[in-house]
Image (cartoon, rainbow, N blue to C red; front, side, top):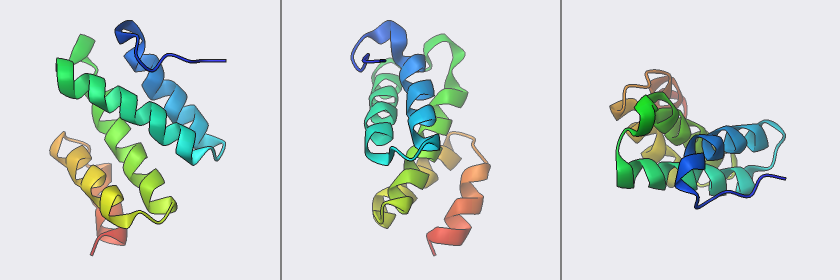
Length: 98
């Protein structure tokens, strides 16, 4: 069982674990891990060139928020993912955030 939410060296693992949890329908726990990943990147910058993980963490968390009926938070995360260069976010914004 994976438990790192605070160990700085495992932040990329938090992103991967959050994505895995999302894929099996564990939305609330996935949001928790993706949030830990996002918070690390916000605090420490582009750690080990993981900008993609940072933007995809926002994308995935935004989608999860929308799926759990928190549209406002979801749209904010999708917008941030787009600002970070994730063009896929704009497809979701067009569909869910108008």
